[in-house]
Length: 166
Image 1 (cartoon, helix red, strand yellow):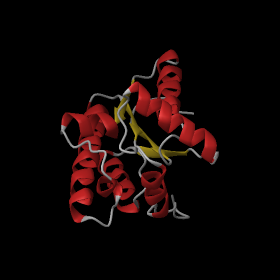
Image 2 (cartoon, rainbow, N blue to C red):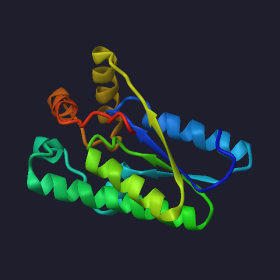
Image 3 (tube, rainbow, N blue to C red):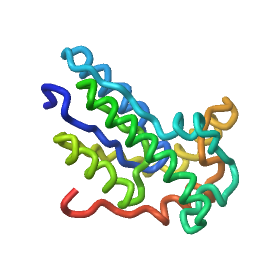
Image 4 (cartoon, helix red, strand yellow):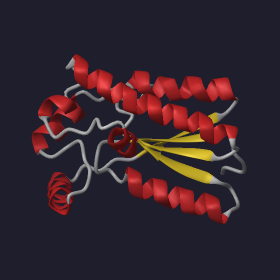
């Protein structure tokens, strides 16, 4: 149970696993209990930095440009988290965090700020439901780095699993 700021909540999971929904529910719960919380979304960071793309190469982390662009978005998420902590607000990090080194950035920032990290792992393995949701999001014009099942498969394949000490 989180009682005050000085905590970072990091959501970990593939796209369409429920991270954004979970972030909103966590924020609502914390606010009802008198704890200020702010959702920091990598999708919104990508939009602000104009780094959204629908190409398959944007998903492929073996592409150096993709990695660089995504790193900018994740660094923006981390910087926003530090600002939240300085205001005694709990940052809720809404991003896949599928690369270990990006999760390590969060652990390092939390350590430097004297904060604890709560990692929430979300899993959704129903392929037909995921494909349906991808189609609905696409048709509704919602922002997503993933527009095809092929892109989703690349991201899943390139995911760094959680370490035992996470």
